[in-house]
Length: 102
Image 1 (cartoon, rainbow, N blue to C red):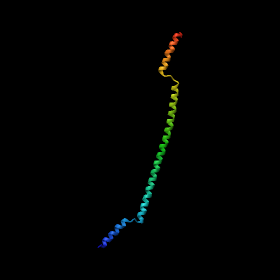
Image 2: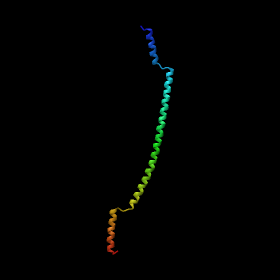
Image 3: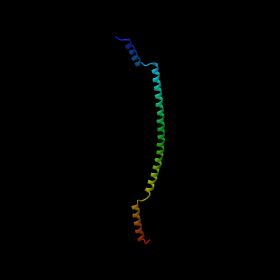
């Protein structure tokens, strides 16, 4: 048979199981605080990504300049003979000059 103390202990245990209005308010407040913290972190991460995007845009512009410079160099190289070709032409010219007494 249950004693008065046993019944009171059971009532205390049941109160632990059930959530009171104050508990709900506390939980709601905790969830709202957590949501605010998460939102702040998302804003921080977003700001960092925007800065990274700006840096990538600057790098893209720099790469464009480098590519244009390489294209200019290639165009100039196309108009310049290779060293061995130039030497060969020099030798041929000297032979012609000698034959023509130049």
